[in-house]
Image (cartoon, rainbow, N blue to C red):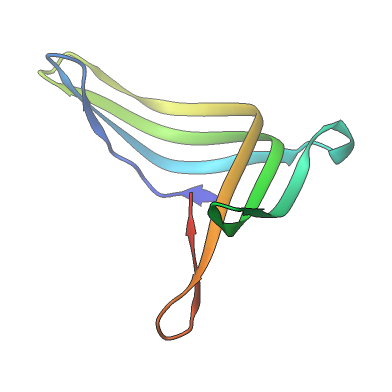
Length: 112
């Protein structure tokens, strides 16, 4: 699985730093066994003060990403280029979907 290239710019006081991330790929993905607290869960949540919504949760996810990066700054104080790897262990991902109908009757969902 690949991820879109990303080039943010941020300020560290005097220098402005830019980092370009390219060739981002998920190289490892595993969800732990439900017997060990991992797995996927889908719930319909209803409360008196909110519209009903769907809650999607992935528990105890392990992922590794590989990427190429280029870092630079203005003024020209920082320069680096290379290949990196990001390792994430035990991640829980949760998404709330609130369904609604458009004026023409199509079902849509807002998410957070």
